[in-house]
Image (cartoon, rainbow, N blue to C red; front, side, top):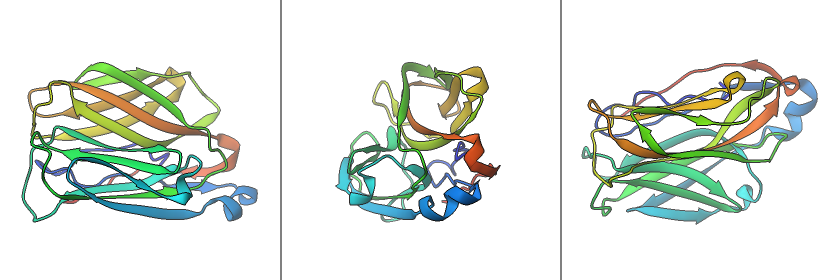
Length: 205
């Protein structure tokens, strides 16, 4: 996929969920498709340093899970980059439960990171971006949080780009809907460097 898609985690605990499936053109693939992962333990928001993140990279997978195997409602979830640092958050209202955050990354030919955000979303919303018809969207990071700071049984998470329409569609929802803030980081890879793009999703509890 242009790892564009996060869909329907197993309720009420957010499980898994993004994969990248880009096959690069021959001159590009050998040198640039370096993969690596970063793992961290936390109880609220946190950061961990990685020399691999000194320049922007694509996100090839992300997984959060609470230790102890208990189900939790969710108030905020995210994994995003700043130079040399992986930022992560996976918390409910009391912000004291131990969890593991693990993200996979892949280095591509572009390291220019773009960001789109809105603070007035409810259920689903569109983040406006510059329309790009000759590029492929590649997810680099995200942050989603309940604007009221309340816990919810999250039923669906989705990040779905529509570059030709100049927007990224984001969903962060339970059965009834609530106000949330959304931030998405992404890279734009020239189509000429991509042989095939596959879109697929995974979920696990």
